[in-house]
Length: 530
Image 1 (cartoon, one colour):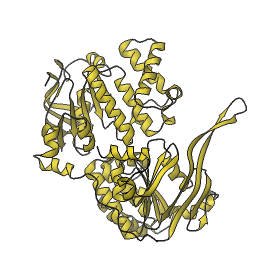
Image 2: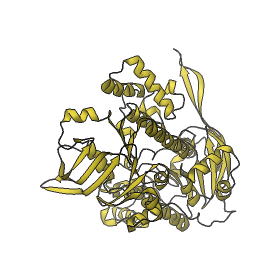
Image 3: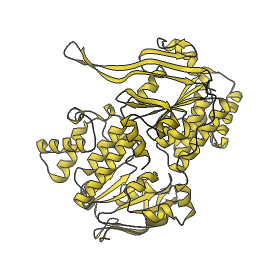
Image 4: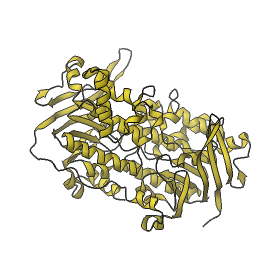
């Protein structure tokens, strides 16, 4: 092994709260050697991101207290060096990919300008050359049509595309150390494989080291040299990838390894009544130009998709970012205008306006990917869960509180916490609040748009079990959008594979994954098995 590039010794960090300092990590020891990848693994709240942010001193200065220890980077003590020295390291010698790109990208600037800015600051590159380098990096990280996308604003990109831009920004200055905080969470398996392959290639080319934070053990298998496991603010085990995955010594590490999605969908009657049917569903967005804003073409988000969803069944929609999965879901709920027919219990609702749809809204609910952005931070858990009741089922305050408590109990939440706010809950608890909000109205159908992708494996495992038990208890029908084929296999009876807005293959989930016919489906299945 080559010499150490980064060494963390006996690090303890706390946050000031009133007169107290609450310690969040303690006795953390990590070493990253030049050219190696150290994977930092653990559940939400284990201290992974705090440790990573401490390296670059990105934690809030006013409230953060470094209680003990030191962080040495290539002979520089990062905890005692000047802010000017830190600015020379951040983004230049040490790059960082953040988990949530919308919080990190400037919404007012085009992505090309943001890429050029980091080149100008750290390398003094002139505008024309910076634009060429920025474009080449957008190509490297798999942005489609980079010549046109370089002038896009962050909100004009999909979640996966925004994450790819963040990766390009972190790598554009070719750093010696890359800190990657859950960088592939929002990406589908094909792009994830491309990004991991790109990172490996850059390591060989630049001798770059990586601190790779993840909760996905399949990524650890693919990219790590060594693994450190964190629990409750401490490193409980560090070893080579092979030993950690085959013979872990700590019980918490064993728990993480055993929490991969598994099992089968709940048993259902194959001839149960059809709840939903989509026929030739099409969502095309017009491209307008010129002084008169005439339609010059269309963005073909979804083209001629057809399927049936039976009562009590689950259908999975899988495919890359931008393949039309979420657009299909929004069209089914009549939240987007579409062509074709959408039949709900024998009624064609494709032409229903807002007023006609309102009585059906109670029976059709949705759970979004990111529970934190989907929950109003100014409302308590009880207010969030009960919001739909005020619209669809007005009750007395006592009846409403009883319904809210019942929904919370069903999703495994303590009813005593119902007056707390979203920031006081963990990621898994917030997703349970989102499920309770949908469940309280006793719906027939729930659209689940990547509901587990932002959760670590142990919590993901719990949420999947919860969804199955609720489905069995209430006869719920799910339309489940995901890029994780192992999760889809665990929950869904039938699966549609989408690519560029069209269905390339569909069928019984078990058969589809064991005997895929289309080359794209084969690629997805092979990548999910890595």
